[in-house]
Length: 70
Image: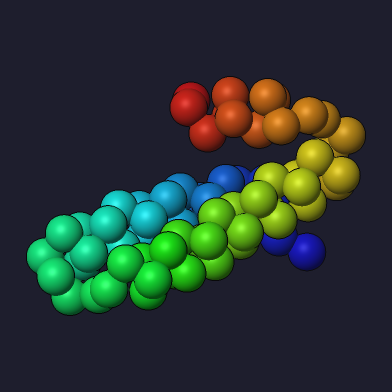
């Protein structure tokens, strides 16, 4: 079982990966379809982590988003 801090850190790490994917596309290193698929995969991972946090701690996604901004 991961702690809340570990889960939030994992979301932040995946968020920075989103930026890397867009940068790679802008530099011409990946195609549009590769970019699209990678972004969907990363967003799915982030969404699943948020759902796990909501279930485990009995909070809603707004509370998770607030924790990520702090």
